[in-house]
Amino acid sequence: MVKNLMTTLEWRDSKDAYKPIKRPLLDFLRETQHRIVEPSYRNIESLYRQLSVQQMSVFVQKEAVDQLIHHLSVDPYNETGGVLVGHGYWCPERRIHYTEIVGSIPASHTIGNRVHFQFTPECWQGILRIQKQDFSNTTIVGWYHSHPGHGIFLSATDLNTQRLSFKQIWQIAVVYDSLRPDIGFFYGADGQRISPIYLQEISTNFSKQNSSMVSVPQSLDNSTPETNRQQEATGQIQPVQHNENYSGIDEVNTELSSNNDRINLLTALNNFFTGFKEIFVALITLFKALAKVIISLAIVIWKMIIELIKLPIKLFRIFFDFSSNTSNRR
Image (cartoon, rainbow, N blue to C red; front, side, top):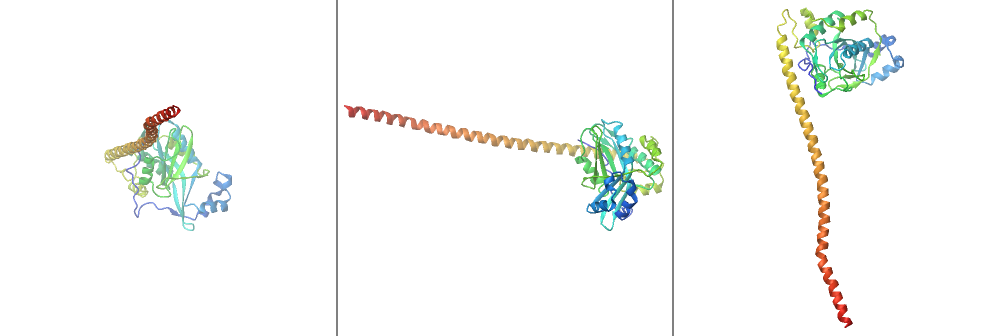
């Protein structure tokens, strides 16, 4: 499985990079208690004790998941994706992280097929426009994509994307199998699986967000320098230059294509060496089996040779004994 994603969009740690909001987990749980979908989670004290021993938790508005599922189900046989927006939090009392996903924004200009898809600079222009319009007080907290019939996991290239672009512990990857269907959440640079806690919607303008998120217009985003600085702070969209004439788009396309070619080559080499290793192991197993058969045959043949060597001696002894018996009788 090959995926060409946001591999040139590396996270950049700096004083301007987005930092999780310091907020006690218990305060967050008390505020969202009435919005928790699963009734068994509404005992806040019990839920707090459960989450306090985990290094990471994720809360997601159910409408955000419904929206991304709708997006990935429009063309269920080809891979596509988008980004997740919300807030990252740090609980100083328990020294743990947690993330709230409040929305999902589809990337409408992806290039892909059954086993591959690629974000383009046009994707980011549409994503930033929708984020500014409908989720202005959020940051990009992760990404999502489909696995048509492939199951729920992060491939080697998915993990490479996670490490390069979403390596912080509070950043999330969502995988949805559009043919089964099934969904999975992962977090951090290593893409560890995590079970989300679903929240009900609090916004009253979700229908407006739905209408704007289903189809991203082709027009370019007229973002301001302030918007650019805000998005650069997320550390996830460095190659996309938002200026008046967008003169950097061709260069970004070239970079993405070149980097994707390198990933394809590395993936092909990895698959080749993995296959070669499997063949080598199979050959060694075969040689061992053949060696055992040959040794067994050699032992049998050697025993037969020994018996053949002993046969004349046995015949001579029989003849000698017969002659002796005959002479004694005379």
